[in-house]
Amino acid sequence: MFSLVIFFLILSILIVVHEFGHFIIAKRIGVRVEQFSLGFGKVLFRKKKNGTDYTVSAIPLGGFVKMAGDNLEEYSGKPDEYFSKAPGKRFWIIFFGPLLNYALGILLFWMIFFIGYPTLTTKIGGLIDGFGAKEAGLQSGDIITAIDGQKTKNWEDIQKVIYARKSAEAVDVSFLRLDKESTVNVRLKEKVLENQIGQKRKIALLGISPFDEVVTVRHAFLESLGLGLGKAWDLTLMTYAALGRLVSGHLSMRESMTGPLGIFFITSKAAQLGVIAVLHLMAVLSLSLAIFNLLPLPILDGGHIVFLALEKIRGKALSIKSEQIINKIGFSFILFLVFLVTYNDIVKNFGDKLSKFFVK
Image (cartoon, rainbow, N blue to C red; front, side, top):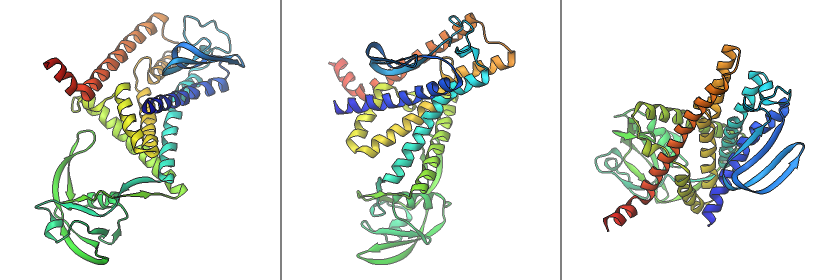
């Protein structure tokens, strides 16, 4: 039950932030907002203020902002209607939703780096046969303090230093053993590994694994902002790289995409790990929502931006019939994706149980 509450809370926050982006710019530009809704289905709460109907509905898996004259069928030409505004102004109304989601992701990463997050210490847990660390005499329980003079405060520091080196290089590893510091020369060995999006690359390794010991790492206020921006940028590049590999067929959709059901299971695990894990999940989801919404697909914000670009080039908007056909195609495609990722989530999370059931 607790995981379900966290799941709906995260979704609600992401939706409210996204729709608030559309809402605030529409108001600023002078477009009349008729309804701001969180959720779908039966209305549980309603309040009208300054001409806008604010509602909360029973199914909190979405939300929307309804602007006056925001589709050509009901557009009457009044100055406070959406289609009465120039394409440039309508672009900002559309774009500000994903922009606020992206900004929320950065803010959450900033908080995580500033509050402090758990990471592994530099204590060696195990050594791999045939690699330089074991051959150089390093032992389980040794605490690595520096590599080639660069201080290592946690396991991430070790990875950053080593991954930047080339294969067959040797590094000087300083370590503590029984409170005595020593230094040994360790030859690196190359190994091919896959990253998070299935890309294979050769990296140099010491041949050690971490000890099951965790330390909390905190950064200064402004340093945390820089780290948050860097984290958001890295995630953006990785997401677009994954989309490229998905389209080209180099990445399986089953392994790379997840829907509401999968997000619920991920949320359940994050809730068990604590607040920082939940904030991290929320940051990743907020950034992913921003990036996905800007894809040039009909019914998504990116699709609407494409329509605006066509309108700017042609000097007039698409016809009602053309827009309806394109939106129906886009809606069908999105619906297909929803069913596909939901099926994948069921297989990934219940595959074993389902196979046992059918075997019986």
